Image 1 (cartoon, one colour):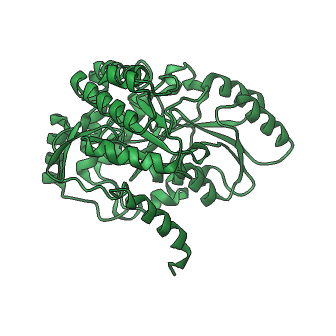
Image 2 (cartoon, rainbow, N blue to C red):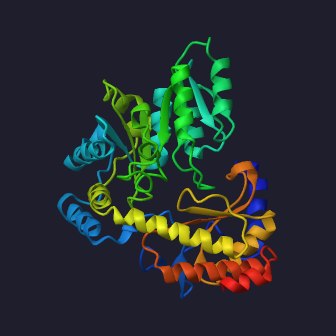
Image 3 (cartoon, rainbow, N blue to C red):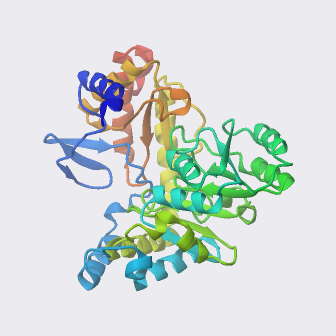
Length: 403
């Protein structure tokens, strides 16, 4: 049965010949939002998507503990079968209010939010237009719904327009799917231009704000808020596992007949619902996100600090639109060596390899947190510069300046 994975096993074996298994790092302990213990040594966490640092927020922790004591550790079933707890309904109402939408629907993971929403909204005879760099959960949701999938070039409104025109005479609904911040490179969609294309074609628009919720916009609602086009976005999907520091996902929108999605979305209907502790901590995290806009300011400064430091050290970087900073690697072997040496130096990042990366090119991916101190960022810059110098990716003189 597993013979088909022989090539995959060979690839994994090659990755681990250089050092650690990047897909199996097991921390001894998590000390804070920014530090952990690995093999008895303190490690700086620079690859966790913990954008606002809320995983150790005391109010979130207290709310989770109180909910567990009052309602137990889990729901042991889906909401369709086992019923909706009061916290589930309250969280959906709170989330809808935060996003300025009439309705919100909570899923057990962000992956399932895309899986359930896309497969229910676009079925056989409909058309899904996906950015080529879309997350795996978007592609999997498209497969489950049996809609016709049309890919357009990454962040290319003209290519989207051309493909919609080719579909103009075909029956079925057309749903465009974009991401607020793309998870590998950290770039943002040209949302205003995409909205114009959507209007011209009379299509629908869904924006996955997984990595932009709590990061972009005056109130942290994401890219659509930052670009002033929230009214043109029909569906907002996102996750609780990034800025909100927990797990779970959601879909929010303004259309009537909302509850029909609860029985149409199989990823909602047949999955056990979130436990009371997670529901309570996410509710509190939304409160914290609204009450502490300074977290977004700190996050922005930290991202700029890391980006500027790496650019000064000689690394080739793109623009700084988000707290995701990725270093392109010349080849797979160099990427694996870089990741291992950096971890040995006490900095944990994400090793990103094809086919999960744009164009299949290897990357070293970092995600900044508002909880990082300037000193920690300087430590990371120095470690990255020194590792880059050893591997011949940056000039020795430039690396020495930063280190």
